[in-house]
Image (cartoon, rainbow, N blue to C red):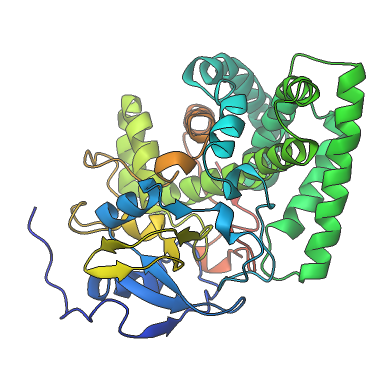
Length: 408
């Protein structure tokens, strides 16, 4: 593929770029990421919190190289105040996101089967039942309706609650805790207080499940903890990670997908005309939509490696941008254009390497079910107001609309 023309590139790491990670409207792509991807694909950045600076890797192949390199440690980020977009670290120390093999391998194995292809497909009828029930209520109540309250929020919350055996009456409490932990606007003290509350909740639930086990993932993890397969902090960390991602990330990803389709009517018409296109459409929506602000968790280099012409040395902090990699013009034709028939390289929206998102298949299935149900039941689905009237989440890690009002 011929690479698009771009300005002369700066030598890697020559300058340190201050990155405020500002609020961006709708699905606008971060302009700094856009520029660095083309001009300085391996660069140095400094964000609002933490200390020092870090490498930022943005090109598709370079991102894959870093993410898959065993010399890149997540565990070494614990207790190190690296430059960050939030005043607190979302992922807990010792949790699956901040461990290295063999601990990471052990923890991932405990949940991998639950989120494997066979189990996820077995969950599809339950997801479909929820989607039909929720959209029936929308039809009964009449337009307009807020999809985030009627479908894209409650469906994934209920499904992850079912998986973990969380009582339905407790979902609201978890949603409240989620809103604080996944925010960049709350202080370290506020976040720590909420983390203690949610950890206490799952410790209490673990005691209940030890005495009254059910056919759910948390009961299985509690049994594994009793047998020495993981510690209590690891058990709680896994539960919190699954809840946060299952509730927040999916809600926003699917809300963004619906918005993208409704604001690209020619693409929506293609999907309506060819429903077999749906799985491919979900992949393109995952690639195109900048689903988060800033970057995810950093890594610490434990050896020297060359990436994109830069020398990353032992002890250096490194971030990768999966968002930028998904817009790499050397991999994707016209990467800033939504094209549901695109059939190029796999998107990196769920990461790469050992820390590839364990819930990727579940997220894809939920997106397919919700989009298909909306297409089936609301052939005239449209935004209930102009795009300029929509309000988007601010001060949050995951991007998405505060509300998505639609009519039909």
